[in-house]
Image (tube, rainbow, N blue to C red; front, side):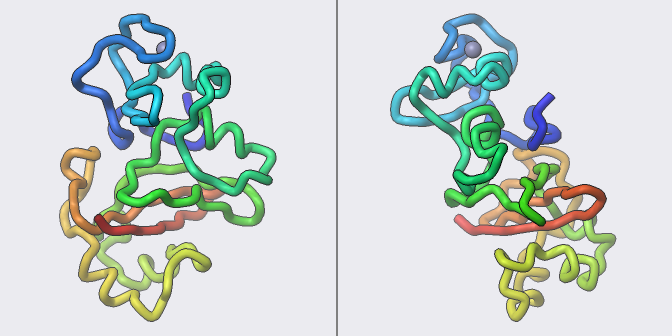
Length: 167
Ligand SMILES: [Zn+2]
């Protein structure tokens, strides 16, 4: 449904306390927590239709000069990071967020992990420490990926890349 976020119902922040979209005020089964100054939640339809632009609020950080910057900023569910990270770009186009990563996503192989590090975002001299911090167990949702250090797996064409941050 979203061009740059593959499985938001599993890996984005979902609003649990409300059943009503804070933008369109309609009752919805899936609401994302957007936690901006003016709105706490929004539904799939409001995101896709670009209602956040009209509402004067935004969700994700990214390079503002890309042809799809507005899609990332206003029309993509929130990336589940601890810090405000810029949405990664490879060869001039945005990557697709896939999931929170664990060692399983790299076949328990540090060389696969190393070669998938997004070069401008990851200091390769830290790779062994980062591998130690990478969770062992398979992560299938945001809830079971709740670690102090998080690894975010993206796809760009056929290649996978990761970035990370910490609480
Ligand atoms: Zn809505």
